[in-house]
Length: 149
Image (cartoon, rainbow, N blue to C red; front, side, top):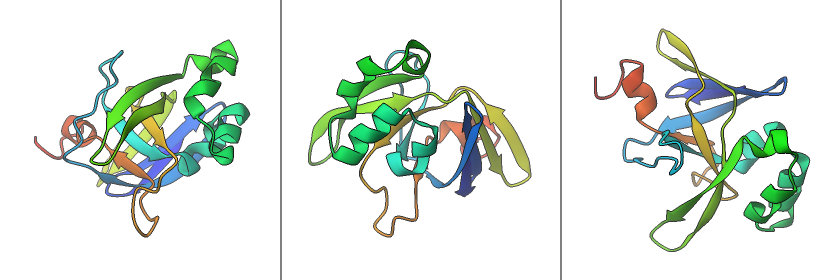
């Protein structure tokens, strides 16, 4: 389970483990998983590593391409992962995506368990002060009665 603090608070869980993360809603984020169409959040690998398979963690830690490791995962693990192409101002590439079975989002007095969120994992920091660990898709607040409702 992942827990997201600051804007919304979130908990993300998988295989009996849970993490809490500091997040911001990125209102400019329009990314979607190309296969499922689900909204894509962006997460620091470090924030979610407790939930990830050891082989994937080893690739991130060694600075290797984590996409190449996906084929080595057990079938049950493999089903929760995918890839997405990205383009930023300075480069392009592929990111591993992770679909945890459980995400609890708290925002104000609302608390909602979600199974429709997918996270694109990055080894890069999401903020200069390393204070933000997840950039949430605005779809989350829109469907909770927040932004844009």
